[in-house]
Image (tube, rainbow, N blue to C red; front, top):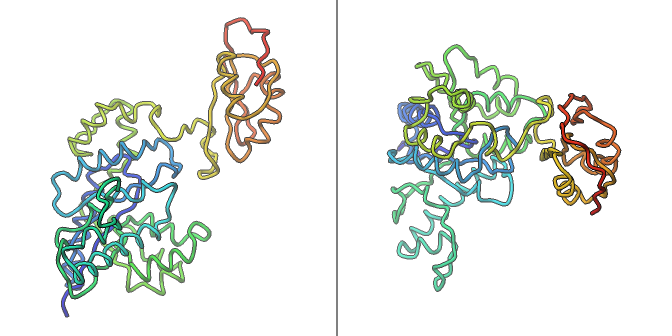
Length: 359
């Protein structure tokens, strides 16, 4: 039996992309092709949307730029911008299904009419070649104009942490897990000394589709992660050889991961605040001009408000906070965060103004 063609898709923040992200593709391809059942024809890195609330997440524009640089010398792994160009956060299942559908459409179009493949595949009218964005640069060259006899299977490439998260009740939609594992399959990169099979055993769904899960051990120890790279850079330590040189240069030129100022979220509230509880908004009340802007944002009316206070709001409690905002700020000299705890703030040395701000 001839090996089945496989496209590996890795979903993540890639914040920033590291050498380990690239290494995962090489390890996975070696393992699958060594088994003789699959032939890896391409790899895709799909960065998550900005709406995915994660601390220190820089914009998708920066992350895509870094990925292009990181992949410049790779002939079979490519960037897919589709996920990060959507209107909001997209489920992993939908990302995999999108890429699978595009591959299927490409193969069908190739066989029906190779000369019309590009227009039909992109969904562009024959008479309109402008104003359309092409998110399909990730299509492997092997499929360009060819008519393959067999399909190409999209598989999720991930780390053992993703497999572990599948086994945790309530963290994933069970139907999503079923679809991902049964229709696509997993290639899981794990470290020496770990036991990923325990996570499979603890999940009925994973056990049911165990034959579609490939565990690949990385025998060459590598503890590089985006979190550690950001921390090292923030502290002024060298990140050379942890990320591609071109990515390191881009980070320096754009002053990324310095103090969190270029993050898509500004998570300065209590770190115990659960993720995905809503967008966090911080206001430093330095002047009445800032108070006016804050009032405009919240749509609330304020009376006399003192200076030198900071307000931390979350969308879930924004309405409640807005109703009591005047009382909270005028009477409190501490920072009110989502968990109700307060931290003292240094009050401004300026003389408080007696003017009132109305919106």
